[in-house]
Image (spheres, one colour):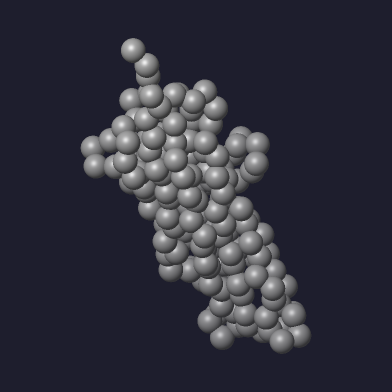
Amino acid sequence: MSLAPRLALAALSFSAGAAQALCLPAACNCTVATTSVAFGSYNPLAFGNTDSTGSVKVSCGGVAGLLIPFNIALSAGSSASYAGRRLRSGGNSLAYNLYTDASYATLWGDGSSATQVVSSSVTLDVLGLSPAQSFVVYGRIPGRQTAAVPGSYSDTISVTLTYY
């Protein structure tokens, strides 16, 4: 009897939430755009992890010379748990998570439950604009999830940009 690997397609999409501003709207405004994490096919019999990346891009405008600090938070997704994010296909699921770094050491979340937000800032140039800043989202599905069944798995993560 031979064991053929079962394959699952996994994708993760981001939805950009409303930006939250503490500075006056006439002085500054920022927007966020995202690129989804697409894991592709997952082999539950493989020993290695399945890794992929996406991105969050922040663009700001407003009064030239203004320093705009900001934080980027990611939601827990459909699992409502940062430690146990799940991609779903009907009643089936795959464990995965999102990280701020290529070493997959720091969970990207909202700053709670041992997660971190990504913080940065931008100083607006003479036109009151600045180049967009892009931040990589590192995604990982751990290997050897042998209960995985073929199908298309997905989750939706909300991105919250807070700028000051």
